Length: 244
Image 1 (cartoon, rainbow, N blue to C red):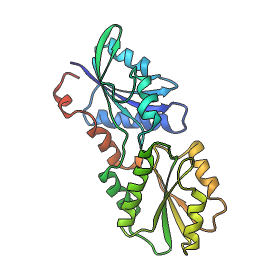
Image 2: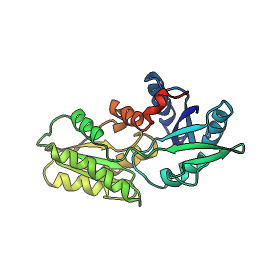
Image 3: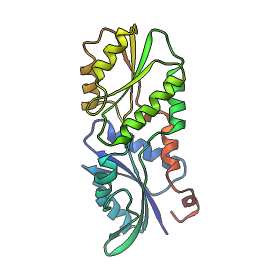
């Protein structure tokens, strides 16, 4: 068995994703993993092409790590489709007439170590400042569950915390205005996203332009060292002893 790892991004054209995906791959390589490649569900290098090249070089068992916070249509169907799987439950596929084993990993989801690290990074609560966690949102229930999980971690730490979404979920502007009406003069926005740039960040910032408060923006949770720990934990540990 020769194993290989694919860091799988949604779209190579998404602003900031290419250098971040490369950084994730390099971090895993520095931890001792071998045969680690970056690919994308849209754009270049396209995932199926990378998978075939790896197979040509002898890889017959793949671990695919999607760069996603919550489960949704991308992680359930679209990204698996880009690595020749019907959905994220697929455990094998065929390349050049040969069966190959696949392990399509889950999105980050509600991870307690990430929640602890995120709260620790932001420090202690302030009486005049509230926290708003933001994501794009999704009709898939996982997005609402995950952002609720991280919001509760801040509440447990004593913060006044709410969550909102740019597309599906609580309205960002209304959420912020309600906090201002409660008496908060500062709002700290924490992106629950892989990157905070491009269209997503513009949507969030545009929504908050008219809010009468001091708005600050934290880095996305993927900047935490624990995010790489989470990716690492999704690779079968027994592969460290296999012929990679």
